[in-house]
Image (cartoon, rainbow, N blue to C red):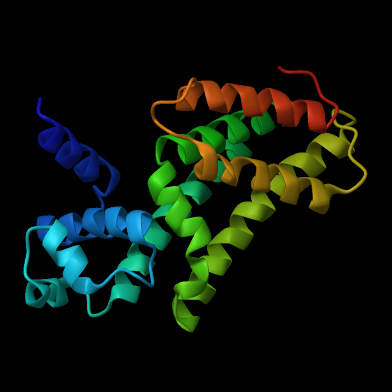
Length: 209
């Protein structure tokens, strides 16, 4: 498979929920452009060109550049919430669930590091209404992780004096993966997830299940 075909398949997989195909290509092109040039320096012409479309064709699917950023952000944050929900609702001890949550959350930020960098560090470029929606998704994700840590603390599995502060530290640790991870680095996304799960269990004073 050629590099271009492989990239196309990766875009299709990551943005499978975005339809039609033209809209999906535009989102993939926007991710590339925002990652390379930053949101504010990117123009709609840049994005359309990368997608092999005219600027006029872009506006059929997205009215503004901000709407594209919102689509990228909401898809990424919904994925993060899904990861945390699956861990919070799973059977097992709090340590089991925390390990599962951190492993999945950190590895996603590694595997999708380009997208993750955009949704984490271009957040303030969103309009007020879109920002409020993303902020709510972030609060819900935070709450689920906080409940896992609180459950472990209440059960005596964890030794945590500040549950909200520890929750923030764990989330920050996982999110930061997107900043430094590269595909040609020494660790795979799964290995990053395993490492971070061990680190976080140490943070809360628990043994790995």
